Image (cartoon, rainbow, N blue to C red; front, side, top):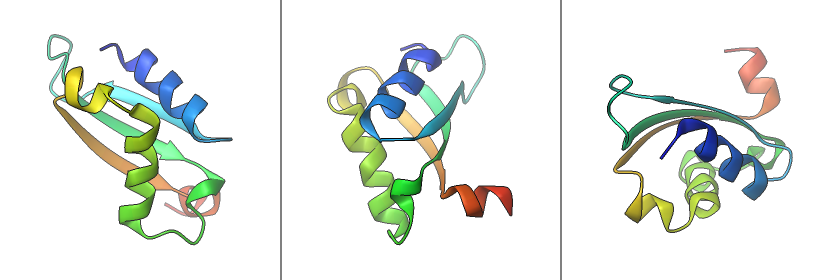
Length: 82
């Protein structure tokens, strides 16, 4: 799955989210991705809950098109301070 398609799914699935997705192991590894997601929806949520929001946005793609996803999730404030 192309990183841009994953970004779109996340941004459409989490209101106001901004996602940056890249191939974790280089250009030719289609199913290992790394994503940085910034969203107000993460405010007050545990890290597990934040990641679950991303997995929910990706739906069945997590089991069919994406083998592994390294996630970094932030609220906008936390991202500015990172």
